[in-house]
Length: 286
Image (cartoon, rainbow, N blue to C red):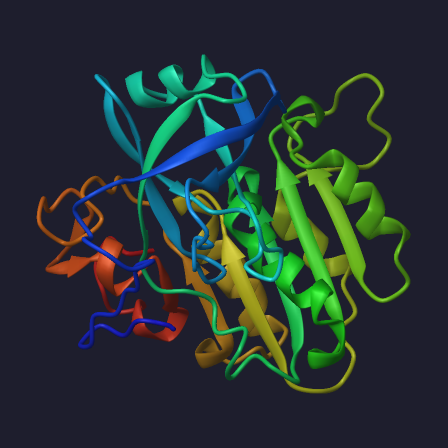
């Protein structure tokens, strides 16, 4: 499900959208100095019911709640995963949690990458900047779990430094596969890093897109989008085939608080996934 500027769209996992469902932390592990990886399961028989690219509101009793992207695919049942960066009081409280602890989950909310619809049968190019790999990971896992539904797959991933690389074990697995292309870069050189150094846009010159219909899925810091979209135009990927996930300061998840508003557009409802072409004329969106 993907939003447009004139037709809000979101889904929830059922029940009252304002009432958190209890969930249990199955595992917690540090990934970088500021990022932790969580696996959770709802208390009850149901799955989360999310789609790739959606987010949930995670609540910690006594602290509040924060919007977090689901970084695992709905094809993997029984639990779901999140990557949480420590940036505020709620995320700091989450980083102090241990397996067996409880949190509240509202959602899932927002639009998603249309994996089950128009992307089926197409070649997919994923462009991930920094923590943008987390929401894209859900779509990447989906495409790999249903590999026969898609054509060629290419992944471009960039971080500020080698120490900030995410999901390093999976990156190694993806690099070893012969049915996808993975290119990585870091902004700053560091000891022990022998790979590409430079901005993520530098990877586009190393990319060779085979003939056929290509779609791009993009997520990263706001400063990245205009430069990535310029490279995609150069590669003749139509703007209607470019799906971007916007990072904004979302709060309520249901279009009530206005924290994520961009000129009347509520990212939590009409996004976070948009077609790039719908955003070109929207000031401050890109």
